[in-house]
Every structure is written in C-alpha cells, then in structure tokens.
Image 1: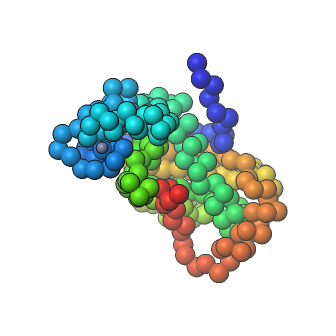
Image 2: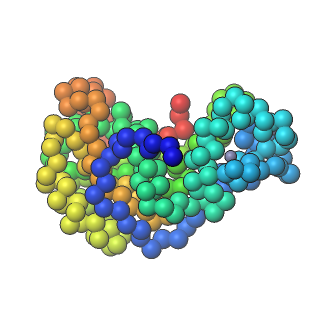
Length: 238
Ligand SMILES: [Zn+2]
Ligand SMILES: [Zn+2]
C-alpha cells in the first residue's frame, strides 16, 4: 500500500449538509492530452474519467507522466464525480489547502492582527470532488477550466451574523468552531472552515507556513492597502 502524504491540516469536524448538487465531469468532449474537442472519445480504463481523441494521445499522455500522476485523483472520484470515503475527502481538503496556504496564511495573520481572533472561511461553488481533480491543459499549457476559491477572514460574530443567517445548517459546526477559535495558538496555527457546493464542510487547523514573523511581514506588504472583503484565488493558475 502507498503511504499517505503527511497531513497538512488537523481536521476537527466534518459534516455533509443537505445539498445534492453534483458537478458534471470536467468536459465530456475534450481530449485530456491535446485538449482538442471531439464527438467520440476513448476513456482511460483505470479512472474512467480521462478521455482521449485517439490511442496515440492516451499512450503519450501516460508516457510523459501527465496522466500517470492525475489518474489516481480521477479514480478517487470515478465516473460518479463524487468522493465517498471520509479519509479521501480529508485528503482532498488537505491537497487543496496545500495549494493555497502560502497565500492565505499571511492573509489570516494580517486579518487577525487587525480584527482579532477568527478563522478562514474558504468557499467554492464547485463540489469537493471537482476541486480535487488535476485538470488537463491545452497545447499552450493553459488549464482548461478556472476554479476559484473565495476566502474570507471571519470572527465568530461575523459567522453568526453573515453565514448562519443565510445557511442555518452551518450552525451545526458552531460549538467546535468556537472551541477552535478560542484555543488556537496564534503564533503557530490558523483555523480553517471549508464549504463546498456538494455540502461537504470541514473544520480544522493548519500550521502557519511560512512562520508567524514572515506571515506578518508578508501580510502587511500584500494586504494592508486592500479593502476587498474577500480574497479570490484561482487554483488553476500555475
Ligand atoms: Zn487528443
Ligand atoms: Zn486514468
């Protein structure tokens, strides 16, 4: 068995809210290697998600190692485009947070100094499964989709007034969230709450990367002039 990569986040609570929206596969009509659009496509037998316009494209995609790396992430969601296993969900959240933590940690530290203790509320209008996929790139190396995360820094008061009022089910996580916000070590960690369109919600903490002193400095450099209410990050920018 493959050893799981070290966990970036410590998860405290996860829940599934009663949403049921499921994303469609990335694009039924696209070749994952040459990114050409075709009516008829072959499918990777392992993951049953990646499609190819011809056998040559499939072989090449595997040979250059592109699909070899991505196939597992596709296999995790399969043709149903859902992640079913609880550990897989946490792993997907880890990977996603790992891709953005260098941006969001300084943001959180900066906001905490100006607004007081709170947490990062990370939202996506995609499902967790779709956010966790490695998307194919076109022949110019550009990603074939744009997937954004909206990131807010919230205090508990703002969570009650702005989040729970619109989505009362989010109150389910309130007790643990309060505990986490009151107890996290500001010098070492941040609290994160992630919510996806499929209804998956994860509450956890993550170690500060880079360390507190550097985060503070970067936070001032990048965010002290900003008046935007939220940070928007495109996870497909490379
Ligand atoms: Zn092709
Ligand atoms: Zn595959």
